[in-house]
Image (cartoon, rainbow, N blue to C red; front, top):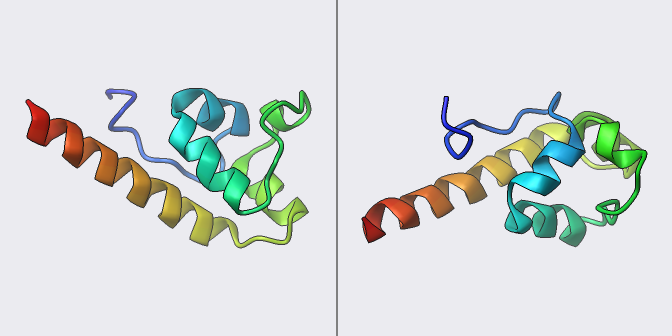
Length: 79
């Protein structure tokens, strides 16, 4: 499956999300998850990070996937 098309899930490592797209990292930072540079966070799952910050992991997954869908639609229109 194409990396750009793969959906985010709560078991995905934060490091993978951060490296995938800066805009996804920005969404997490806006929610108070300022762990982009933390070596421990790179091996944590989205669910673990969300719980540590008092956030609902399922809501984060929805928001991150919505951001990806929007970005992918924009790319498709440019082709």
